[in-house]
Every structure is written in C-alpha cells, then in structure tokens.
Image (cartoon, rainbow, N blue to C red; front, side):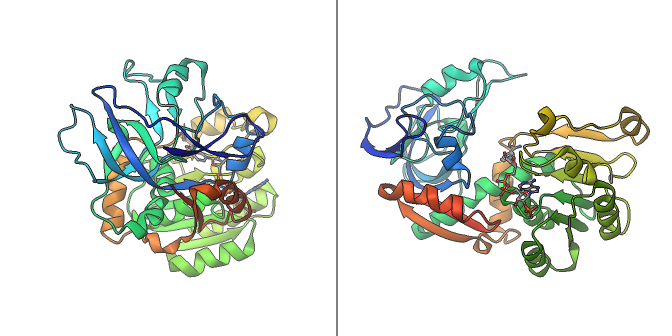
Length: 359
Ligand SMILES: NC(=O)c1ccc[n+]([C@@H]2O[C@H](COP(=O)([O-])OP(=O)(O)OC[C@H]3O[C@@H](n4cnc5c(N)ncnc54)[C@H](OP(=O)(O)O)[C@@H]3O)[C@@H](O)[C@H]2O)c1
C-alpha cells in the first residue's frame, strides 16, 4: 500500500510503498482508507515540537472514513465494502478499569501503552489500516464524494464526549470557553443540537464570534474576552442571563489559568466544569480555590476524547439533520500531496475549516 510516512521528526512526509496490513486473526479489521482529516497542529506533531510519543517510521493520521476490506472471524455484522468511521482511540483490552490508551498513528501517550502503538502502528495517512474491531463503526451508505465531509465526525465527537460526561440537558445554559477554535466551535454546534437553552461562546476573535452568533441565532451568545479575569467573568454572567449549569473549556496550551477561571468560576451552585483544553502555563496549575469548590459544590472533571457509545449517537445526529456536515469548508488533497495538506491545515485553522487527505 502507498502511505505518507514520517521517517523521523523534522523530516517531511515521504510517499512510500509499505507492506499491506495482514489480518492475524480475531479482533481486527482492515479498512481501505478513503478520507483522513489533517489537524491544524499536524506540522507541530511531525516536527517534534509537540513532543508527541510516536515511534518512527510511521504513517501518521488519527482516524478517518473508509470501507471494510476484511473483517476478523469474530465480526458478526461488518461486511466487505461497508462505509465506516475509524476511531483513533485504541484502548488495551486486558485492563477494563484503567486501560492504556493511544491515538493510533498519532501518539502513544505513556510508555505502558507502547505495545499497543507497536501493533496498531500506522494511522490513516495510508491506503489501508489495521484497526481493532471495536474501533470501526458503520455509518451507512454514503456517496464516495462525501467521505471527506464525514471526517468532521472526528471533530464533533471530541466535544460530544465532554458534553456527555458533563450530562448536558436540554434547556441548560452552557459556556463554551474557547468557542472560536476548532473544537470549541464544534462544541457550540453539538450543544445546540443537543438542545442547550443558551450557549455562551467566548473568544477573542471578534469576527469569528460574530459569525458564530449569526449562524446559530439567539440561543448562542458570543462574548469577546478582554484578558481581565474578573471583567470577563462579569461579561459571561451577563450573556448567560441566569445560572450557568455547565462550563466546557477548550482553551489551548498557550492560554493562562486566569482565562480558564474567568469561565469556570461563573458556574452556578452545584454546576459542572469540564476541562478538555490544553492549559500548560504554570505547569497546568488552574489555581481553583478549595473553599469555592466546596461551598459552590462544583464538579470539576477532565475529559479526554469520548466513549465508543458516543459514535453511533453522533451518526444518528448527523443522519437526522441535527448536525449539518455542510457547515464545514473542505480542502481535499491526494496522498501524494500530504505535505501540502499539512501546510494548508496549519494556515487554515478556522473553526469551520477542514483539511482532508484522500488516500
Ligand atoms: N481533551 C481532548 O480529548 C482533546 C482533544 C482534542 C484537542 N484537545 C485540546 O483542545 C485545545 C484546543 O484545540 P483546537 O484544535 O480547538 O485549538 P484552536 O483551533 O487553536 O483553538 C484554540 C482557540 O483558543 C483561543 N485562545 C484563547 N487564548 C489563547 C491564547 N492565549 N493563545 C492562543 N489561542 C488562544 C483562540 O481563539 P481567540 O483568538 O478567538 O481567543 C483559538 O482559536 C488544544 O489544547 C488541544 O490539545 C483536547
């Protein structure tokens, strides 16, 4: 199979012929990859500046859309040619309470997870991919031309995981902190589809905020952040116009603890704060006050990715029209132009922009 291979951190992707994956028995599926999303920070993963744990050489790529080529003998429903969503989070099967987790073709995160990375090594920047059976979910029939559009599922599922973990209910008021970013913007779309009564969308970029307000109508209230923690919290409270049930934070690693607290501390008595962003400053110390947490009875929860059950739910939300995949602007590249795709993704990182490889 042809693949875009990272031979070493800092080298460009190299188009090579690798051996086709081989089905070694039960528990695995081989998929013909049709479309793979390229994240805006892919270049930083490949040049090593993100310090993601990856053994090279590797065909990178975190999940995608494809068709079943071969399913293991323990698959009871998958058929050759089925269109599927390929989920990149691979969990070890030998420890149910605290499995080791990797993102296939993207990062193995901890040394303990290395055997998973070595076995499910290559990602979706390749013509074929070997996946655990449970990471393959049928999406139903689609037009091949729409495969790139369906990769948006990967972006929507991440905030969906946080909204499910925080148990967002219809009618509730949610703050999405960092709503002008890729995952924050997707969080606004998913929360609106789940029936949030009001979504306060924070960010600094006035144009993107305005566009969010226009697109979603009066349930979404954009608020421009100033960088002054207390002033920003007052702006958020005003836009909420009542108690805030839940805060979902998607600020990136460059953000400060004050930017996160501006939203987190606005939550009502007994409210939920879900942390999904990348705060790294001051070693990621958020500085939440013990007495505030106790008296305000706040639940603070970190969430990484999403549970498997979220995937068929999201497929149904798309199929029912609650989520419109057409709201994303796509730029598609053939595998041979993988490096151009990575550069394009970095330069076009808007919340509705999506760069896709078509292996
Ligand atoms: N938990 C998980 O499973 C999970 C999964 C995927 C990603 N993440 C994390 O989620 C975070 C967001 O990812 P993303 O791809 O959505 O990022 P992104 O597209 O770069 O969006 C981040 C947004 O944050 C805003 N921002 C606020 N303060 C900033 C600052 N000081 N410097 C730079 N930007 C600032 C920017 O909008 P304004 O300029 O308008 O403020 C920017 O649009 C990342 O840290 C990522 O690692 C977590």
